[in-house]
Amino acid sequence: MIENPWKEILTGCMNEQLAKIIISGPRKKDGVRKIEIRPILLKEKLMFQASAYTEKQVQHYNLTEAECYEKIAEWTEGFRQLEALHPQEHIQVLISKKGKRSVHRSKSGCPVPKANLSHNRKKQYILDPEIPVQFLIDLGVQTKEGKIVHSRYDKFRQMNRFLEFIEDIVPELPKDRESVIIDFGCGKSYLTFAMYYYLHELKHYDVRIIGLDLKADVIAHCQNLAEEYGYEKLSFLTGDIAQYEGVDHVDMVVTLHACDTATDYALEKAVKWGAKVILSVPCCQHEVNKQIQNDLLQPVLKYGLIRERMSALLTDAIRANLLEEAGYQVQVLEFIDMEHTPKNILLRAVKSGKQKTSGELTELMEELHVSPTLAALLRTERNTADA
Image (cartoon, rainbow, N blue to C red; front, side):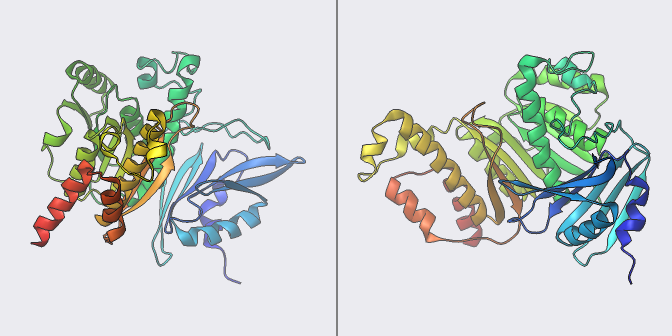
């Protein structure tokens, strides 16, 4: 009988001290996107609970140690990465398409939360709410004692939700050089600091992150904080999205709540750079709302609120299709719960190189009499390149 290689890799971690095992980077985008494994006690017996997350639901498995190795071997056939977080050791395993495992072991470079062995436990966050982090304290999200400020809990949840999206796409970033990430319209930069802290300080990835915004006073404050923390590869600049030319290549572009067509210029920049990953949460989609006309839909469009919401959804659906035309695999995901804000759609695009061409999108825009900025930007560039 062939010995399961995961038993040799993980044996030292498979005990009650294990914080969690994370299997991420799915090779197929339409199934399980992430698996988390943690120890639990069932009838005083140590077991391991695996939670398999799809886009809309989660399935749980309670496994013995032996069963856990078998399931890990089965699951990792469709994933690119496994991480084991344990107080004594941090294990990272990169998995090639042919199943070759590259194992990296190191002493834990960051505090690992003590494992909670209860069967029904409280929500676990990527950023532990009980560990003080200076940028969270300075931004008013956390107290000096390490407690989340009650009125800022929604912001804390938003940060962690965003980091879950980052966690999923990390395997797409280059592993043999520095990754350049630009956050357009970073504002007060809650999520920019969270992204840097997670990728560089916790995960020790070689990243350089640039935050860009038009508000000079806000940018100056963020830059001062970055320097105070010693975040040498995090910088903030005052500038306009459409005019920024400060780098030659970018691996990931983040644009969160860039207003109206500012999102389009950020997406166009990302495509122009050939960014491997794009994460965009659009905001204030006014352009299509001013343009949309359709006799059949007039009984619906005459109501201002409904017209506004339909226009926003159409804008983002058109953007997603245009990114697919440009060679990206696109998912439209819920960023945070609708109860917190209606502007909660996140476009996650990963460069595939496979361009999709369809006359249906052109027909739709003509039927609705809309001419979105992103369509003009991307299609004009494509037609020029093809000429």
